[in-house]
Image: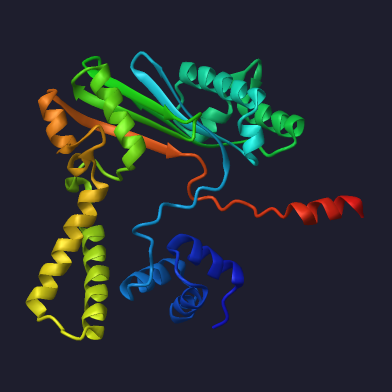
Length: 296
């Protein structure tokens, strides 16, 4: 089947694989992006495990805490120039202050929250018209805690990454340390216990196919029992890297987050991390062409 250049580019951005490999993967899998991702991994071509999601859109990720409620959200714009502008920063602050007081849960409710007498959805439209760039509230989440629990939050580098965590036990300093670690290490789960059997089965199948392909091309093929051990080892390593408790603590790599929390009499109840623009492909700009178009 014929595949579009756009789809090939999207697969390449996600995997780091070559254009021809991406095109072949898509042809082999009838244009299915997810199946093509697995196909490239099985062939040992994809670099997706080592490559973070493409960060393209601009904006600010922010956290607000008030009592037993906390919110984490991302406000997007089109250019870094606007994201660094005081007007945009003030808008983020104003939105955050209003949303934490409203403590709404659904997107529909959030967009109706009034800011200076106008619903947020209208404020965003007005700011889009005023600033000249599309302004959107892309992601928002309300997190709550019990009186005995502790919030920890961290916002990195002007709002490029924000994280929020709820601890059982511990204190605000410990909670902030965990939030900082989450921002730096990007865990996907608290522990392996949260990973579904379907995901474990899927990853095992992909890693087994990958190992078998490697073995077939090796000058010294390994026996099946060794292949099985390789798959288990790779699976455990992958899950260790994406599970918070098994990660090495960024402030002290000699201990894990699990051991650090135990020493502080704390455990993680929940967490959320946002990196600005993750998963959005940024529009490619050609400054020379833009200047020429303006002169026509």
